[in-house]
Each structure stands twice: as structure tokens, then as C-alpha cells.
Image (cartoon, rainbow, N blue to C red; front, side, top):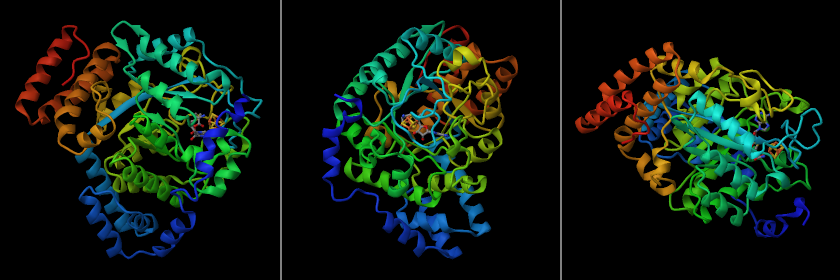
Length: 482
Ligand code: SAM
Ligand code: SF4
């Protein structure tokens, strides 16, 4: 069968639906209703958010439309507080691994789009994947997200083989312990295979929730041109028990205010249909310039740094228990400002060229990259800075390895579990990093952070366990977790 028609039977399920859960007119009506909220309207919403209850769309609209400096600052302070109360001071680290930049689609903003002849096309072989992974492990990475274009060469069997290859690559003390996947929407049959191979999170970004903009950005006749096939990708994953799923928007394609409402409606749809299970994480990349891709240099709805800050804080308050990922697309100065507003995961030491870890040795590979990175610092530098910013870097993968995903993860996130399990595990995985991979300077800074966070552990038994585990690690043991 022609690759472009591979889902034509599956599309029928969605073509037959009268409507989907994104109602463009309703979203605009809600935003317009709250075009000029009063301070008291904003404070009422903040009071609800303080209780760590997911906000409703109209409440989110109030925060989105608020232009009053005083209450915006109150919102920032609350976002920071909620983040610390729910997640602790942890920041989870990962790095992407680009497997292939071959793609049959033609998304206007992406360097990998089919018509871009400025990019050298490449799919890693299994040996090359191992080479990349060894470098990542050697730098201290434990968690990755594998990124694929959509092409016959990277079909589901190839994807599964590449994921197994990542997990099976070991060197010295290290290995990748959690491989998430960012790929095109898949059918239920394909998703079953991804589940069997043991992926972490399945990420699909809707890019834009606005129907008309979606059509403009994704030409008809391409697989990606089917809005609903993409919109219901997470549903299909949850249908087959792959219950760690992630959503996202590519900011710059359409009005950020509409897109935030789209993310919230997507979350509500999932929670209502799947027994309270919402997305595991939300990503909010902004469009970055990409070689041979003029649209990416002048996105029509480019989001300013000020609005970006606002949208991160609003998301934190609206979906308090959903992880939030800020990528190295953003420059260090933006990351410093935005992380305290609610971010729970970041990548560092990332190379986004196919074969980038092996070839670039820290430099860019513009002819194989999807877009340009904003933060090209090493993992070591970012770990050190994170410790200096009163946060605790974590490479923990315990929940995933203990099978705490989906509904179970939601229960976990909503209890004191984070403080009794996630914080100790963050300390132990940071220790592992400091012992095996850190520079002297980072080790010194990191040890101070460990002392500080051990002293904050309230449960006596947990504290004792952590102190003993740190000692065992000094003596050579690894991969100890609570
Ligand atoms: N091909 C799959 C897909 O489109 O879902 C997955 C890989 S795609 C490379 C991953 C994500 O990169 C896209 O979902 C999009 O949000 C993001 N992206 C594409 N072009 C970008 C650009 N110029 N700047 C920043 N992010 C971009
Ligand atoms: Fe292909 Fe994904 Fe890029 Fe679109 S965003 S061109 S589907 S790699």
C-alpha cells in the first residue's frame, strides 16, 4: 500500500465524527467574555488555583486576558509556590536523540519537511544508535526522548528495534533507563507494539489547535494534514493501555491565548474519558529558525518573552499536577526566568542533529538539524547552574520502572509521595551523576545541594536510608532507589 494512504481506513473513524472536542468559536467567545477582567476576578481564580484544583476554561481565560501588573506578579508567585509544593524543588533532566530526519510530511515550519532540499537526510543504523547512546551515557544522561520523522524507513518495526537498541546499549556504570518517544500519531495496533517494547511517554504535539491554521500549516494530502488523526492520538494510546502520554503546542503558529485553551480542553477531554488520567506532561516549544524554512524565521504569531512567561505560569496554575517540559530551544536567560514558574523537566547537553552526539562534539550541525538550539551549554554546566538556583537536578526513573504510570502516577503525584520518594530519588540520582560524570566544580556545588536537601528530609527512616545509600554509592554501588 502507498505509505501516504496507510491510515486511510483508520481516518474513517474520525471523519464520521460530527465534531471534535475543540470548538474554535466557543474558545474565542470565552476569551472575549473575559477581555478585561477586574483584579477581583483574577484573585478569585488565583484562590481556586491555590487549592490545587484544575481550572475550568473560563477561569483560564481570566488569567490569559489579565493585563494588570500587580495580579500578574501574584500569579507568578503562586505558580512558583505550587510548583515547589507539588513537585518539590526537583528538575528532571533528559536529552533528545534524533533517529531520523526523513519525512513524508511538509509542515511549513519544520526543517525536516519533505520539500526542504537544504537538509541532508539520514536515518541512523542500529550501530550508529548505539554510538550516540554511548556518548549520551558518557555525559551522564539517563533519560531520553527519541525523535522520528514520519517515513516508510522508520515504520513501527524500525522504531521498536531502535528503542530496544537504546535500552540494550550499556557502558561502564551507565544506561538509558527511560526512553520516551516523539513520533507521528500511530494506529492502535502500532501503539500496542510501542507499549510492548517498554517506552516511557508517548509524545504528540498538536502544533496548533486552531482548525484553519492547522490546515494552512499542514498541506492536504499529507498524513499530518489530518487534524483529528492527530488530535485523538493520545486517546488511541490510552485505549491500548499506553497510559503515559504527552501533549503540546508549537507556539507561534496561532494566537497563544487560543492555544492555551486548546491544551486545557485536551486535558479535560482525556480526564473525562479516561477516569481522571490527563496528560503526563505538556510541552510548549516556540518556533525556532530552521535551515531552508523561511516560515520558521518569521512566524506569524511569534510569542514574546513576556507572554511566554505568562503562558507558562498560567499552565502551571491551570493543570497543577501535569509535568511541564521546557526545552533547550530556549536561550539560557529565558530558561532561568521561566523554570521557577512551574517547569518540572528540562533537557540539557542536547544535540538535535541526526548523528549529532557523535559528530558535533558540542557544535551545531545545521544541515541535519530540525531547528536551531537556544541553549547549547553542556549538561555539566546546566546541572551546576540548577544546583546554584536552589533546585535539585534529578535523573530519576523509578516510577516508570516500578510501573507507576497513568492513573497510578496521578494518584502518586497528588500525595506526599513526591516528598518521600521523588526527592530522595532525585538526591540519589544526582549523587550518581556527581560521582561518575561531573567536573570538579560541579561536584562541589552538587554536594552542597545534596547536603541541603538531605537535611530537609522530614521522615527519619527515609533520611537514614538516603544517608546510608550515599555512603554505599561512594563505595561503588549504583542505581539505588527508595
Ligand atoms: N514527526 C513527528 C511529528 O511531527 O509529530 C515527530 C517529530 S517532530 C520533529 C517534533 C516536534 O518538533 C514537532 O511536533 C514540532 O512541534 C516541533 N518543531 C517542528 N519544527 C520546529 C521549529 N522550527 N522550531 C521548534 N520546534 C519545531
Ligand atoms: Fe515531519 Fe514532524 Fe517535521 Fe512535520 S514536524 S515535517 S511531520 S518531522
